[in-house]
Image 1: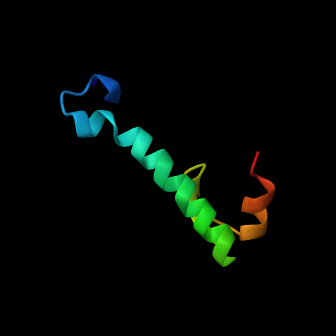
Image 2: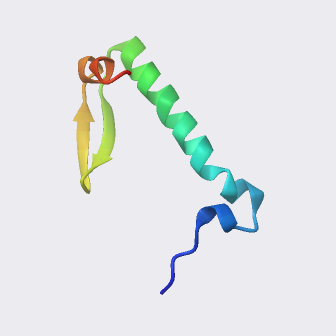
Length: 60
């Protein structure tokens, strides 16, 4: 099965989904830092809990 590039999708909402997901992830990180809570992410196929301290240290 051939995987199509999402940027070539006919639906404009689908084409813009990647940008929206990245924006939502950034807001989620900021919220976790501000509220000093953990953020759960998928890393290497496993759910991983990241502390606000780790998130703060990973900001460029």
